[in-house]
Image 1 (cartoon, rainbow, N blue to C red):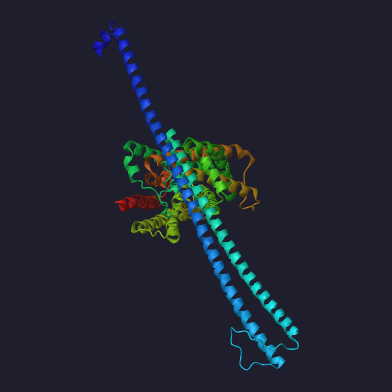
Image 2 (image 1 turned 90 degrees about the vertical axis):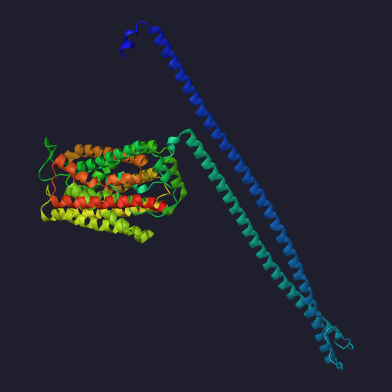
Length: 588
């Protein structure tokens, strides 16, 4: 290096020329690489277009074969019906002739008996006698003709009824054939549309490969867990839906990419914990809290059901203003999927989406109420009763019986919840909150969140997680607005002083930004590391909430509560790891 500096003044033109040559060679290599990639993409597009043309030709051949088969079937049916009608007419003529012969024989016998010229022997069937002409022969002949006309009219009426029934039956069969033809055309049209959509998606992928979301087959409850602002590491086994195997994708991921996903998942858990602590700071207490030991903050609103609704609405205003932009960035086809959902008219899917949003709305309001009355770490720990309810619900609804590890984890969660909640009843809650209301609200929040998880599992695979999240946010916003618009009793109505509105607005903005930031981090964490690993990191939520509560607002916990929190965290982590390892065992 020193030698280069010594001779740099003498060989400066030569160095400049060599630099230009290197730059020129680099530009040529980049151009060649560009041409190579462009050629490969053009070849792929040409191949896809050729396959598309082949598929269209095959469909036309299928339609031509269908028309030929239909014409052949119609010809065979018409031939059979003509033969059958001819046979019916022949049988009818024979019956009429036989009845007419019997009637004539009977009438001749009556005429002979009445005229006194009875025959010496009965007239055999099939032979017509020639009796002596009676005195009233004309009258008898008229009666005979009238009876014959009546019999012939009756026979023709029966024949007309039979022909009418046969005609109606033939019309019904022709209508059925027409219906089958329409159904076949509809199936062919759906097949053509499906093939066209797949070809368009492949062409779009070639144009922009980043748009193909690798996280779509993942469990949607893990993908949208940031909207709860609570970690959801142990969602129960969902309804079995056909999915491509994730083993090749997992092996193809680089270790650095997985590490980045774990860092992002940890960052998302940190943001969720900060959200819970910030929510705790917004709640008023008897004694002002010391934030970072530097200044006192008395809080903004008192704990209550109506105030929890108001905080949720303020947060959702920010979320609904920014979430569409974030959703479009993460998944460009979000609006196409939402439009398809509105046009589908699938009431079952809409029921699951709106039902999950309603349960999530209740869970959010209740957890806000719980955090306002008891320490945030304890509230989040009690909230983790939802894995037990989710596992039992999946067992009842989907037949997914938990394993031995699952039963042990459920026992561990139960024991941890008892340990974590018992100190809250033994002593008064810090800040003067209502311990009974806080614990009950945390339990109810976990139970309602389990209902949200189960309904989300039922809708998994039918809607992409990002459009699902956007529709959920919008539905929760509507539920919050309607709840505040409906007149509430004095105990449930919001109680806000006019002077605290600026602080409440700032708090809502902070909570909304933390919501979106956590959602963004969690989405990329699932994309890089997978939903299973991200959910394992999410088990740190209660511990990190308690840690940040201690560091920021000096919210101390008793050793028994810390032990219960650790037991719950380890139990939920065991359920997450067991869910992550089970598919690998089945694949092997």
